[in-house]
Image (cartoon, rainbow, N blue to C red):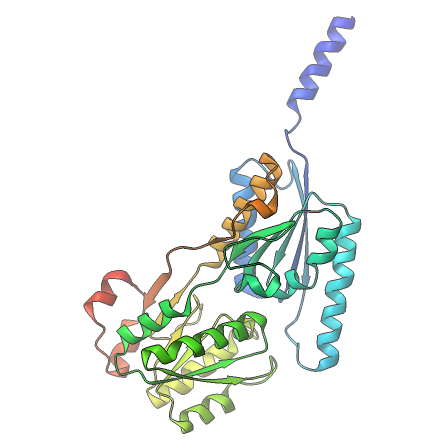
Length: 329
């Protein structure tokens, strides 16, 4: 009888999943690109045997920041991040995934101080959240970045339109967008390009700023990594494309933007960034790796697309060197 009980115990023990993982997710801004990153993260866990509903419990908290306009609303969003991060710490998860720069920047200290490993995703400039460089993680946290050197984008834009001189850049107060605007403006001078930035509120229409820059003489526009362009069913991008089509001005989307209308699209794939964050989580959960020992991951090769129909409308002959490396959209 005792032998039978022992056998049953062993069978039950070894039939249990080897991991019982609890993950909490904190995301700021409810946009499709972040859904892609989240899905990539979950799929990478599943491909490594950490499957939601089997041996993984995952809770996702989304803080909607679409109306981030006034000071009071910004304070309200910050308070939501702080209160949600407290709930996450109280839940005692094995790991926390943060999606976006604000989600990471304003929650990380509380989570890390509680001894919970943190993996971030969709942070475009890791030094903003306290990383020593875009490649090196910090104590208790690591992740995957959207960062790409703006020089890569400038080279592609100049190959596409060799007479490019003055580029308009409309962006919001999104941390990623401001960091990108500062860096590309500093580096563009070396390529004979002047960047003319304009900051808009997240609830503001893009039309007045676009028309103002056209009147000032820009010969192109760039769309940066900026949550602003994902709001209101991609309304800012659609409006910019419409205005630029009317004035025969090309748009360079320095992000894989879902709306058709740019001449060239170049940037990282959000689902792939989520997959990279998932790889970091797997190393922490299954291999007991310390977050600070894992270098920050990024997509090495840009996804590059060109719109040949848009080029025809603009009277631009796309060079063969570009067509060889870009896919048609």
